[in-house]
Length: 207
View 1 (tube, one colour):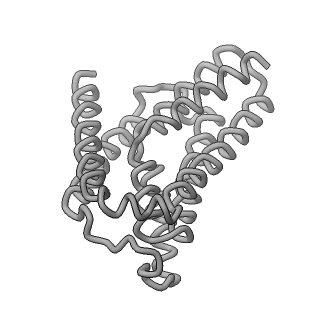
View 2: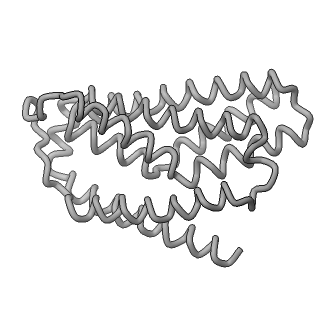
View 3: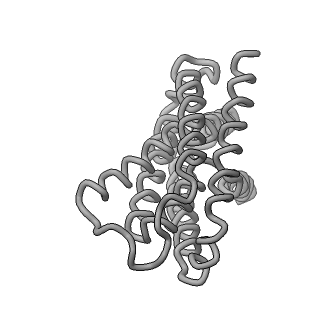
């Protein structure tokens, strides 16, 4: 139980720190509506689940400086720069008033799912966190089945937290408030993502 509380606490604290996943959910919830934002949440959860499976089976914890993890981190830097540029370029360019969302189509739904999946897969924080966490669990000889239960808990928590963020951001009274402030929020988000990319890239180069 003590180990579980430590794992769950560390994972929840990691979820609380805003990153590309958080800003993507926020943007979709405000500008596209709950249905599209929920699919983004599902995509992000699938990406987290994949990282957990990779770490659980030891494919990412054998060497934290391995080619797979390093490749994900460099790709993540490029993705953060790309996302940051999009936020800065398109700040405030989408309607936010309820009822002005585009009609949902299969293509739009697939695009939302893939956006969440891509964001989750190329989020450097996700890869590094799960690789480090399962490396610690393996070093403590935590049973394989217990690690699997931890993984299921974390997958459920990611989906629940992301859906909560989506629900809060899509509330009508919050949308009306965000309508005025969203351009500045998006510019701030873009700047933060670019700074995150520069900081991560600097650390990778120094290694």
